[in-house]
Image 1 (cartoon, rainbow, N blue to C red):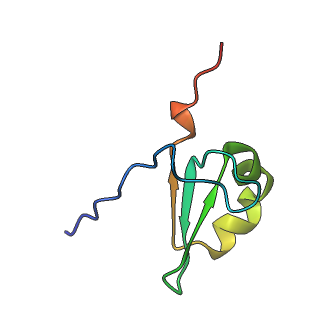
Image 2 (cartoon, rainbow, N blue to C red):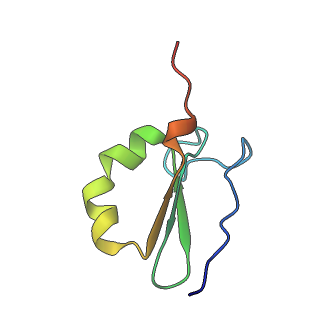
Length: 65
């Protein structure tokens, strides 16, 4: 069994759609990756699930008051 280490997203990682902090990293079969904030990740989740090789989701790190 092989395990892949995925780097945690940081505050420097920005959503490719709007520039907000990214909480999702989507790896595509081509080897490319897309970063999304929680909002755009949810908005595009159905399509991303169809095309993504892997989705690394850190939305559980969002703190709400």
